[in-house]
Image (cartoon, rainbow, N blue to C red; front, side):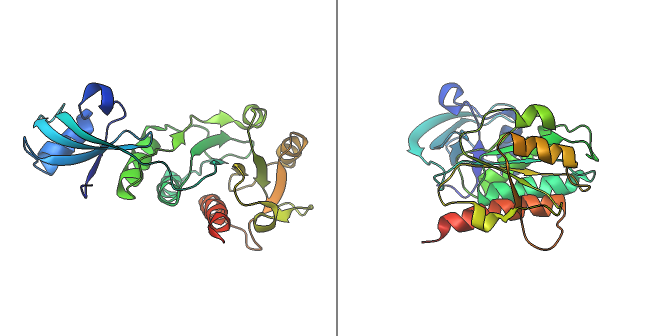
Amino acid sequence: MADTIFYSPDIKHTHQLPEQESQHCVKVLRMKEGDKLTVTDGKGFFYDCTLIQAHHKHCVLSIDKEISQPKSWNFNLQIAFAPTKNIDRIEWFAEKATEIGIDRLTPLLCRFSERKELKTERLEKIVVSAMKQSQQAVKPIVDEMMAFDRFIEQPFDGRKFIAHCYPILKRPLTKAYNKGENTLILIGPEGDFSEEEVQKAVNLGYEPISLGENRLRTETACLAAAHTIHVINNLK
C-alpha cells in the first residue's frame, strides 16, 4: 500500500478520483501517468491502482487489485454531541475520534446549545483526511444536525448512554459498558443537557453515566467516551 491514500467513494464504478483528490494527486504530489497509488472507497476496501490519465479535475485510474480492509473493531460506536461555539474544538474531536475508531458522529441541537447550526461539509473533509492518515478504509458517517428530542426517539441496536453533570444516580462508563456491545453515547453542550432532556432520554432507555470526577469540555468528554469504549474492548 502506498504511503499516500486517496479517497473516491465510487472508484469501483467510475475509475476516477474526485476533483479535490485529483488536484492533490497532480498539482501537489505531481504524479504522472503510470504511477501507482492506493485508493479507498471508505466502505471497507483499498484499491491498488495505476494512474492512466493525470488531470487536475478527474484523474483516470485502472484498478490492479481490490483489498478488503474491514474496520479493526467488532462493535458499533456512535457519539451524538452538541457542537461547541468554537467549531475548531469539534473539528479536533472528529479528527481524533476517526483516528481512534468511530462509526457515526451526530451533531445535536439541545436546549442549552451554543451553536444552533452546523455545516457538515468541513467535518466530512476532516473525517476523510483522518481516515486516510490513519490508513483505514471505513469512513465514519457524519449526520446533519438533529434536534435532541427527535434524535432520542430513533431506535438503536445496542446500549444507550447519556453523560451529564447532575447529582443523580449514574454509573461510571467503565463499569456500565460491557465489552463487545454496540454503543450510543450522548454528550451535551458546555451548559450540559437540561434536566428535562436527561429525564426524557432516561425514559427512552438511555442510561445515565459519568466520565470521571472532573468536569470536561464537550469535545474532551466526546473523545474520552470514545477512547474508554476502545480501551475496554482491547482488554483481554
